[in-house]
Image (cartoon, rainbow, N blue to C red; front, side, top):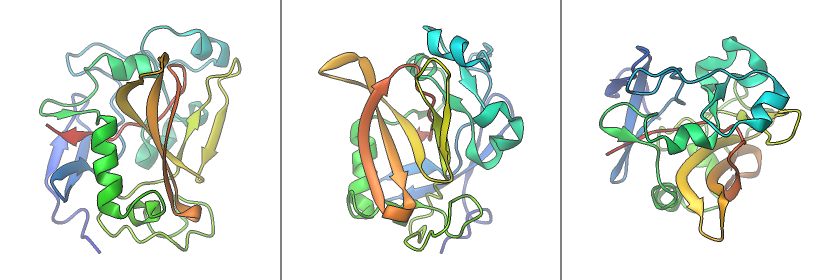
Length: 207
């Protein structure tokens, strides 16, 4: 298994957060979820806590799971798609991955039924049992959960699923965007799409 802290190159976001990175096939990924509270031009990203406020947003926003900043490490922030679509979330030289880039990673890991190869081992950041997890490639996905696009802005699925935006719209419905879910206990790596008011994590990939 990778020595994830000792040997991985790092990148720093505008807030000074440091992320380790790993080469997986032809791609270099951050191995921690993004937790910046500013766009890369210095603009503040609004922290939106209220459920009704979250649901009604048509502009960028982020939150911490259950509005608890203690969850930022290692789960990162949950961003709506308006924040992703700004094109300003990632540090210079990095970007929010496209659907095709996510699928490249999934294929490298072995396909839709090998998602746990990308998941952190153990039950510190995943619900028990987490027997499939191997973290074979050093991606270190954790069960960051999500925020629903319902009127309560409900928080769901922490320790159960890792959820990440892709920088791409559903071609059949431009009000929805693609996202990826790793469900370690079922060894799944699924693609789906959802409304812009969902809150998902972000993993950045090198340009």
